[in-house]
Length: 321
Image (cartoon, rainbow, N blue to C red; front, side, top):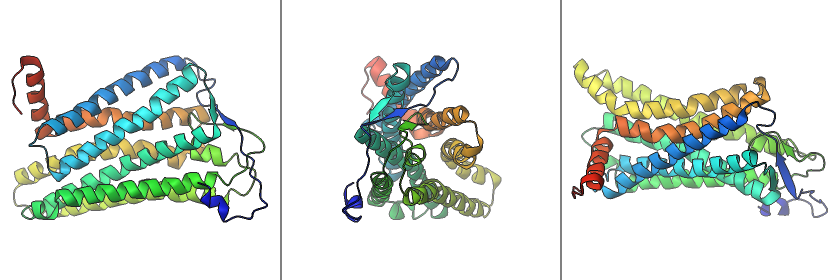
């Protein structure tokens, strides 16, 4: 991160606190029951995403480019919920609200990188659905394993570089007054607002990043479905249209689940009471990783059938793979 500071004048001294204090969830009545819910949701998320990943690894018939994207989504959801929930429960349920400066920036990096990848994973899946419906005869030629792996690798690189810049700009801030972060984790906005020198670059990044990781991906997904609907309108029979569109219902559910809460929180966050915003933001962080594997298991026939075979192997001991 220090390369951001090397470009500045040598005589500038940065005031970096030894620790920050996380104040989120403070003063909310009966908040311990909410932590029970978070633990329950995390348990479902862990079991669900590990199950999806295990099924995809064991079943050799599930090796299509789409399933590579699904595996990456499950992996990202697992890492995201694991980075978020245990730390939140430890911080507030056991009153460990002090977090060191370096740990705070590390926490911020992982939370935002994984959150960004959750969004971009849905773009990868929308590319798969778009190509499958627009070019059904050439789908296997156009969307290869190499193509999907390249898309996912580019998205990971995009996320890591973007968040490194975001966190790197925090390192050039001095914190000479309050060290109390008005959030439940090391959120970028509440942290940079504590800076007592020029916060313009961080403020600009706070405006750019939501567009880059939420606005542009969502716009691409909406545009892709406009193209899909246009392509489906050319299919002669209603039955064939419905059958083709059903292959997209799982992805549409994931898109609504991720983008609707995130969009509401970021667009209207300043108008929402602080505790309500904290609860809303935490829910938008944990609910998608919890429900994503359930949606994909029940709405993707191949994964559903493979899971049945997997359970038969475990319960009855038959080797069906």
